[in-house]
Image 1 (cartoon, helix red, strand yellow):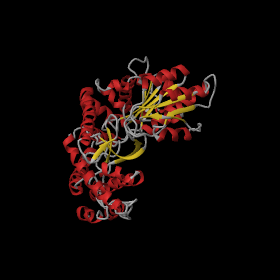
Image 2 (image 1 turned 60 degrees about the horizontal axis):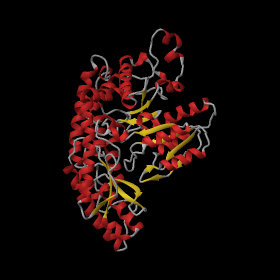
Image 3 (image 1 turned 30 degrees about the horizontal axis):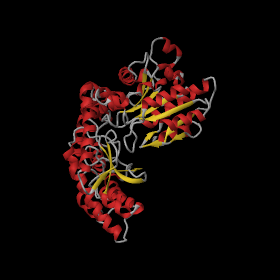
Length: 510
C-alpha cells in the first residue's frame, strides 16, 4: 500500500489535501469514461458490461492493494463507462434525474465529515441544517398548518412506509382500535402494498381508476363499505407510469366525510410546489395528514433525498425512542437535541446537506424555472410525437413530465404482436446503447390496455431539439421490428437486435 496511514483519512485539517488529489483522479476519469461511452449507456447488454467491468475490477479484494489512485481510476472508469447516464438527453426511462453539481459537491463534504444523524454528538451542525431544511419543506407542503414538520428519508418507499406506520399507530390508539384499512388506487406505487405487508396490515383495498386517476365515486363507495373502520386513503400526485395526479380536492372531501386519513404520495409531483404557476395542480395536497415528497426525482439530487411531510409535528410521536447511549433523559433535559425520533433508521447520512446547498444556491425562483422547464419540454415533446406520422401519443394530456407513445406500425399487427414490437424497440435501443426508454401498460383511447414507450423528462436544461433524434431512432427501430414480426420471425423476447455486442466491444474495450 502506497503512503503511510496519515494519507488515509479525508477529514481533519490535512484530509482535504489528500482528498483533492484523489478527487482529481475521479473527475478526470469521469470525463474520459463518459467520452468513451459515447451515449446514454454502454452498448452490448448485460453480459458485455459484466465482462468489461470484471476485467477492470476483479478481484475486488486482492491480497495486496493496488493503491488509491489505481483503484479509483479502474473502478470509476468501470462504473462510468458502464453507466446509464441521466445527464444524456436520450436517458429518459425512469424517474432518474441528472444531479446538480452543487448537490454532488455538497455530498463530498458530507462524506468527508461523515456525520451520523442519530445523535447530536455525532452531527452537531448537520442536525441544525436538517432541522432548517425540514422546516422549510414542511412549510412548503402545509403552509397554513400551525406546527407542520418533515423527516428526511431515503425516498418514496421509506416515506410511504413511515406514513402507513404512523397511521397504523393512530388507528390503534383511536376509539375503534385497529386494524387500519389502507385504501388506494389501482394507480398506486407498489411500495404502498409492500408497506402494508411489512406492517402486518390487511392488503390494501384497491379503488378503480379512470384515465389513470382514482375515481372519486368508487372511492366513496369503498369507504362506505368499510362501515367506519379506521382507514387511510393513499392518493398519488404523479403516478410512475403516466405522471397522473389524482383529484385531490374531491378525495380530501370524501375522506373528511368518512373520517378517514389522507396520505398523498407526491414523490414525483411534490416539487411542482416550487412553481407558483404549477402549484395549483396540487390543490388539496395541504389537506393530507402526510405527504411523500422526493427530491431525487424532480429535484435533481443524488440518491437518496426523500421527505415525509406531516401536518402536525405531534403526529411523529410514535417514532420516539429512548436508548441511553444516544439520547439519555438527562442529556435531553440538559439541552442536547434528540435526533433519534426523526427516522426509523439509526445511522443515516446527512442527506439534508445537499438539499440545503441546492436550495441556498438556486433559491425558489430558479428551482421553479427548472421544474417549469421540464414540464414545458414534455409538452413540446408530446407535440413533436403528434407531428410524426410514424408515431402516436397516448390520448389525453401529458402527465407532469411523462410522455407515453408508440409506433403506429405496431397497431397494424394486432394486440399481442403490436406490443411485442414496442417491447423489441425498447430493448434494441437499450442494448445498442442508443437510448434508455421506459415502458408502461396503459389504457388506449378505445379502452384497451396496450404497451407504450415512456419518456420521463427530468433533464433541467435539455432542449426539445435535443430529444427529437430519439423519435427518429424509435421510428426506424419500429420499422425493422415490424418487418421481422410480419415475416413471422418475431422479436427476441429477452434481448434486442443481434448486432449489438460487436459495436459495444469496439466502443468500450478496456
